[in-house]
Structure formats: C-alpha cells, structure tokens
Image (cartoon, rainbow, N blue to C red; front, side, top):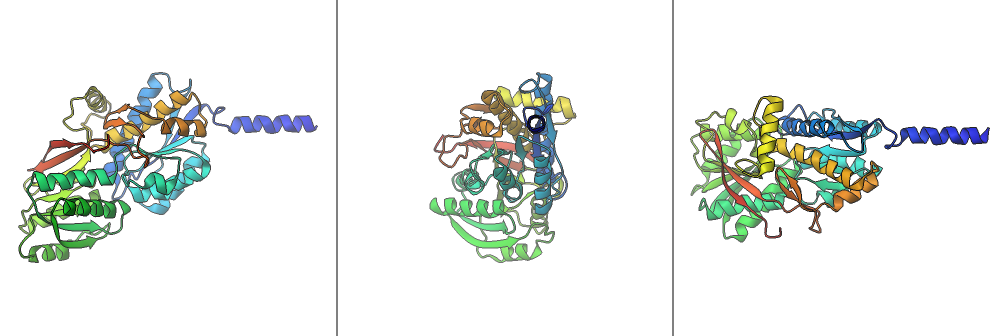
Length: 380
C-alpha cells in the first residue's frame, strides 16, 4: 500500500511539473485597458506574433508555446492578481509590462516562486536590483534614455534653460525627470522651473499658467508622462499658444501624441525611445513586414517590437538551456550575449544587468514622426 501511495504521489508530482505539461506556458502581464493600453496592447501583439512564429517552426522542446495574458487594467492590484493567476496556471517564465510601477506589482511574485520575469518595456535601471536575480530587462534603462534626450536638447536644439514637468505618481516618470535633470545640469544647462501632476489628470491649465509666467521663458519644457497624459499635455500646451519644444522619453512613443492634439498642434516635439523606426537592419525589416502581414497595419510604436523581442529572448534562453526548468532558463537568460533583437542587440554585461542598447531620438512635426539620430551609451 505504501509503495502504491508513493508511486501515486510521484506520478501526481510528475503531472504537475513543467516537463509533463502539454504546452510551454508563458505568462504575459499587460495592461490592455486604461492609461497604459496604447503601449501594452502593441507589446502583447508583438509577443503573440513571436509565439505564432515559434509554434509554426515546431515550438520549443518539441512542444507548442501557450501565452496566458490576463488584463492588468492599468491597476496595481489587478496586475498582482494577474501575476498570481498565471503563476497558478504553471507558467515557467513571465514577460510583459511597459512601466516600472506595474512590473513592481507583479515581478516580485515571480521572484518569490523562482520563476524568471522579462520585462518588455519597463526601463528603471534598478529593476533587477529591486526585484532580484530572476528579473531581466529587454529595454535600455531610464538613465540611458534620459541622457540621450538631455544631450540632444543641449547639443542639437541649443537649449540652455528647461522647465521640467513630472507625473509624480509613477516610478518611471520620476526617474526619467531625475536622470534628465542631472545630465542636463552636468552639461551646463539650467532647470528653471519644476511642476508635477498625477496619472489620470486631464486638466493642465495650472501647470501651463506657471510655465507661461516664467520670465524669461525657458527654451523648452520636459514633460515626463505616460501615454494617457502625453497627448493631453501637448494639446493643452499648444492650445495656449506656447510654441517652445516639448521633450520627453519613451512614454511619448504613442500615436496619442499626434492624434489627441491633431497634426497642426503636434509639432516641435522630441522624445527618446527604443531603436527601431527608420532602422535598416534585417531584423527590423522582417519584423515590420511580418507585423503588417499578421495585423494589417504598421507597428504602432517601439513597444510592439519590444514585446516581440521579450518573447524571442525567452525562447532563445529555453533553447540554450534545453530545459523547461525555471532555474535553468534563468541561468541561460543571465548568460545572454549578442542577442540580435529588433530593438537592438541585447547582452547582460553590466553589473546592473541592464542591457546597453542604442537610443533613438524621434521628432514629431505636424504629426509626422522622424528619427533624428541614434544615441549610443558609453559602455557598450
């Protein structure tokens, strides 16, 4: 009887193991509704395209990949619930999120379970330190992208006096402003006014009045915002007749920057983002062609290829590990060097585990987006 019981328990354990599952389950944490949806929606679409291609090529370890993607609804509690749900369903790795605040609502739960999590778009450079050794980043860090836009503002736009607005409710936006300010001041620039707002704000009239009252006027205003506030802030600043350049980071890499204010008002805007637009690398061309063939539209922004890259990065690690054991996948991820991603080569060579990647500076003029230059970090 004891032998039978032991055999039954062993069989049950085997059934519950990752190796015994019929599919390779990957958790995808994205906010498909709410303020982050214009970034997370395209990112999930990119990840889904990657899964389709992986499965068409035979899957991983002889099994098909299953992406489990509940909606986090741009809410930290809902994101935590989504993380708990996918973990309960036996995922062996997680991907997703385009913002640090939401990564911190879900990724620590993966860390506790010993399951790796790869963010597709969150950019705070301390994420691997905050979460732990099972946390990996597909994108660059906020320090790099802030330095890129600060350098461009000072060197190419010739700005010397800049006002800084910050969404004070998000880790990402606060970090972006802090790194921009430090770099701009280091170069000899001056921050002449600071202001704050919160995620969900729709009226920027008080901030605009304070900006307009600065004498002399700054050469530009840096607006650290997520997409839902990006388009609104541009619209309201321009409607009040303020024509100075508007600067930001990858939270502005959304169609909302042009569609909300309209093309006439969406002009003289500059932001740093992930390298992919106007890039002639073969990885970029293939991704754009495949995305258009799958969805009948151009990739909406850089977060679409970031989602694709996160999933392909995970697939590469599983292949190299030749295992569905989370610990072995984690080790393979940590050893990633020279992975040819759509958004730039990924190598975990820095002590911070933040990949040193190029940064695009994109301008918006009369609603049209143009890559002005590619900035590269000093430590490649």
